[in-house]
Image (cartoon, rainbow, N blue to C red; front, side, top):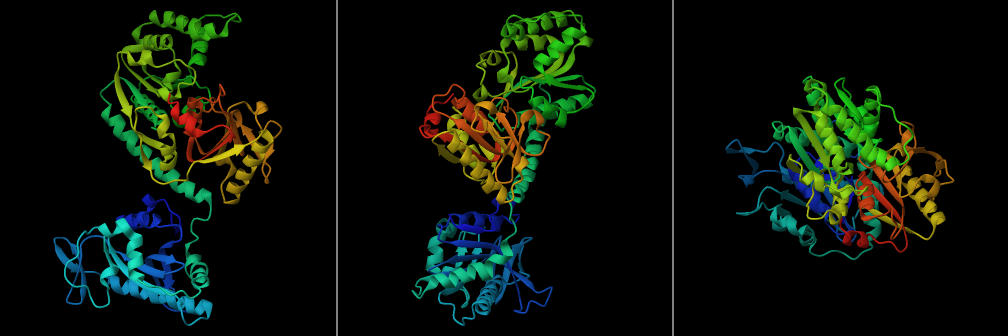
Length: 552
């Protein structure tokens, strides 16, 4: 893969033709360096504030030299010495002649190299080319100053390296490394240090993800508006929580009384942040049962069997209570998030709590079934089903990473690119702690804010490799427990407590082979919490291939 300067998410490039060429240029071998939107001054003194020009792309190879590429969208022709584009049903003269732009850029870069290196001769080749990514064919004769091999169509992009080599044809063997090094570091590179921090890159992704999520929310809500009882099945990252919250807000604004509930208490903080409304009760399922029953005169002794008390006693009492209530005392709508955590008897309880003609929505992912409750009861529930198939949280790289773990389901993505998932093998907990600190230091030194990082452990902190630490890394950044996530620092949580939540960057630590708290479901849940960057720290005998073979 070529080194791209600046290294952008291609979808952030507005011009479709330049975006397409950028994606193809990225596929060049790693020996190439590609500059996008290189700006230069028309005079060497750079005294004219309005004298800036731009080269769409500059492709540099240490053995060949450099080629400037001008990219033009649409259909273009050259006739009677004039460059024209097909626009509004007819050919019109281009405001700027692309060939002149490419040639001027090439000589400007060459002159700048001479000034910087004090060397009159650039020892390699220098060329220019035109690319028309919306076209597939060429006809007629090219101008004398445009070589046939330097005029590219969309089909030529399938072998971009071949086209670059064809332009140079032959090249000199004279000490090229120093020349191209100076060209890159002293001439081309300074103007392209736009994305100097990881925070900048993550902010771009965050803004893009927010737009995508909003569009997908509106589409799904519109499609399901007339259906008052529905189960939404979707893998991690398909927007279940945010779609559920948006449904809750829409119904609340219509004056309806809404219960928005889940099993994970930490997820309630997300409800309170994004779905706060006077008509919405956002709460943990069992907390709501306990409080409601107490308010209706029930009293509880210390249970001898906590599992039986929470799994059966409380739901059964709540069912009995609401079975006696009038319709106007029940909820207009009930929305359940992380529905795979709920038992069948809990759903029977909830069904009794909602009005007969009320709204009942359940959002679930069977791949996140960490508590073994199963989803068979949901499949038999008399509700229509809707499958969510687009990953709205994770980048392409993380989506591809989790794909082998999702049985019989192809999850599409909208956030293209991203950083590959990384693995770090450790010998013992001391070694793991060293590796974690090293990677934290590396990311933060690149401009990543510590609060964008979450460490997810298979065990609680006191049983993890970080048990003796309250701060971590060279900057002594605080390790903040999930209960205090509003504080500044690096968040720490178990994988299971963080289910339903998300973080820009996730470190999964304590991964061991055959561990009961490190099942394929745990790895899937932990990894899909990462929106943009995922690093996994594991013992030397553990392998991701073993996890992929054990689909769940």
